[in-house]
Length: 254
Image (cartoon, rainbow, N blue to C red; front, side, top):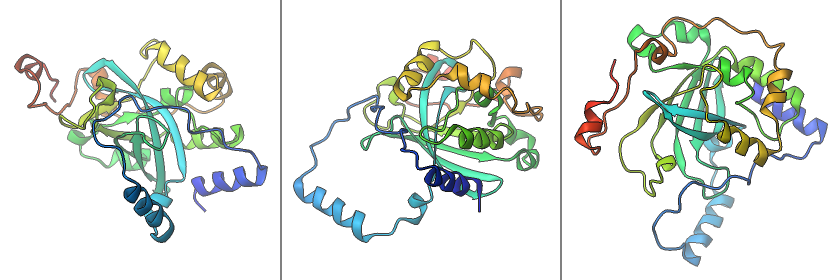
């Protein structure tokens, strides 16, 4: 049984009601006609009749924060819905909220330290660590018991993530225009805009500071060379051909 399945079983056995969703709206309202009744009926029928194994496998919900590689001022909350492919590889879809109409914002792939070490050096600079996200309390798993969340964080603290955002609703873009952007995770105190954490904590009824204290017993693994390369001035980003020329010329490169 993988860890996510174990966490699910623990939650059921403890008979605790989930409180991890339906409290965060999308950042934008997109243009388009309202759904017709016929479309709603088709949706309801599909929900009842169609199997969706890849979606059903998304059995863990993580909430954290990202910033654009090369632009730490561009910060946002990210709602991750994840599944284990095996014990060393996790895949997540990322939304800008946790309600039904949340916008699909991007994807994140998470690997173990062992797998990260096998990557080419040119690849590693696009990956970030999760040490600070876990130890600071910024990364949470809403709706599961504290004991289960702590165990999950023990697994995630030593992992590495590669994240692309494809819909920049933090920029109030009502449609998914532009190009994907490589995202990073925070690595130290005083990097994140505190109001982002305060607002998130308030919505979920949690305290990041308390989680930080509770996670003090989680070992802090060493960061493998190549990850969080932005800290050494090695930043990779995808130039946006739709951006003004001045902005394109200032985009970070390898």
